[in-house]
Length: 99
Image (tube, rainbow, N blue to C red):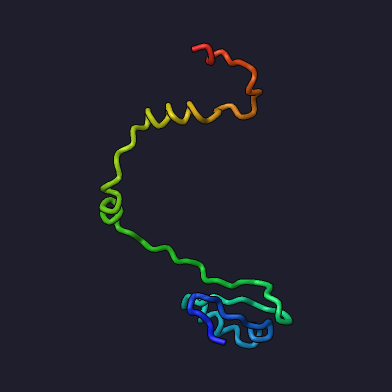
């Protein structure tokens, strides 16, 4: 049975114990594993993604086509559709509702 490159490799509890150094090196290289006990998958071990620095100019260039936001309009639209007082009874009229 062949394994697709994106699929994690299944390893037994014994393999994890006996070959932990090699497995940790593989994890550092980006490989994922499914740990099994008695043939039953019990855990998935995946590498932590490393943060990548992106220069400021690259970020600005990537978002250059995005339109500017009119924050006053956005806030007005949010106030129209989102209840700012979720813990209050919706059927009780507040003083600022008569405007």
